[in-house]
Length: 231
Figure 1 (tube, helix red, strand yellow):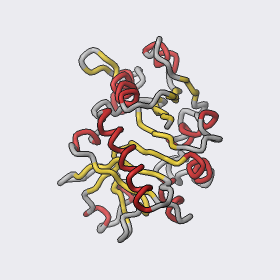
Figure 2 (cartoon, rainbow, N blue to C red):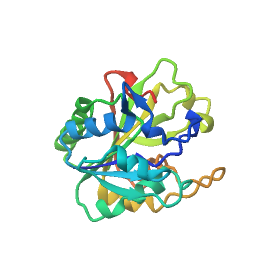
Figure 3 (cartoon, one colour):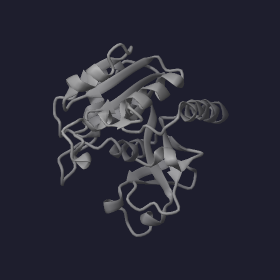
Figure 4 (cartoon, rainbow, N blue to C red):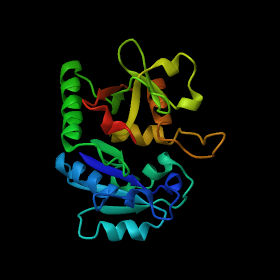
């Protein structure tokens, strides 16, 4: 398995010129914690997508065995950011873990459990999964993207709060922003994502609707501690 850490965000919510992944917790950048979790899960081939003030991110990870990929369009969106790393996995017949660089609470054990869950489902159902989403159960999911599933547990789509219907807002299972994708299906579906009408960005979460429409199966793995998915 390979991994891509998305670290090209502008960090506007923090009202800071510093990239958001470099804001520190106990003296270490958030990105450092994410990288340790990914490495701790057993993944060795790791790419980091950088953009805004990318040289600072590179410097922060100096000495780490990672590959850097530059997102040329700072407002391209998360799908565009992931596509920036496509040289790493476009011809790979395996799985890619995708995680945001500002998710310092996600544990290595959770990432290992996601990988085991994927293997167990495939062995039981005798077919390949296209993806797994890390989710959390929140009594009050306000503000989080909801994961909408069919009666068989397959993900239909991930819908953001502002775009969710009244019924969809009742869903307590929220998107944790950590995914495992089967690379051939990922590259196929990413190219079908259209720019958001309001922002012009390409949203990675749109890939789940496309996968469902193509008949590809995506399942959810719920974190034991919902704190891990609260960004």
